[in-house]
Length: 289
Image 1 (cartoon, helix red, strand yellow):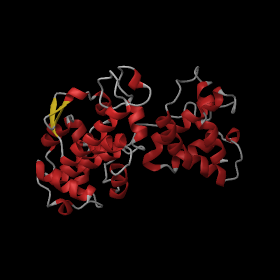
Image 2 (spheres, rainbow, N blue to C red):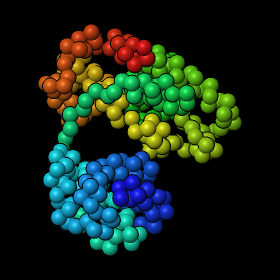
Image 3 (cartoon, rainbow, N blue to C red):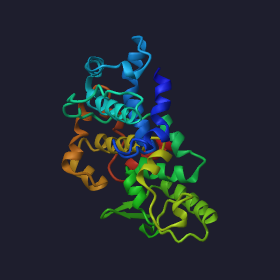
Image 4 (cartoon, rainbow, N blue to C red):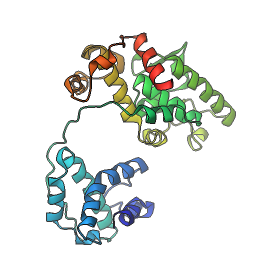
């Protein structure tokens, strides 16, 4: 049941027909929704359910009880699923109605899998490699990447959101390759934004952050958190540095403090890291080497 229904959920015509229930979900949002809802759907299939029409409020509550810290995200995902299916008349009752999720659980960022990060950084697609480098080395968000213009990068520095970022050498290398690719593929474009695709190359609009997230295979947030976490451990928890270096608010930076005493993290492993350029050099050797 789970795989069949996931295909139904992800079909564009199903989403488009639910305009009265909610706006069409972007591809990345659909993928994230399915990932969050899938454990509950698979558990129902294991219990012998053959259709989501059979799912009751009690079934949803039981699934949430075993979701642990992911209760809020699981309920949100299931709500999206049942709203779309009800709008399409695949189901006739939304069993998630009037169930309260509570506040989302704050999670402690953990290190990314380096093999996965390396794979994105070494992508043969110059666009992906350049975006991945900016994210992995400088913790830029898809919104940041979307807003970068050609004139924002000069003299080896990126001017963005009121900050000046000294670009790491691996980032400069990938940007040079990407800019050559950009010039060859769209030599006559008037678009001032750094990153282009087939549609916006004919306009002057920026790429959408969702498109960037999709090109990075859902790794954007993971790589950003990994970079910030690395700096936190390297500086012994210097929140002010995190705010200055990555444009975080104090409350945003405090989210990473739990990592200092996390049992799965040993700050000693980062003792070779020093603030500023040395930290970037160490990251480069671990990611690229």
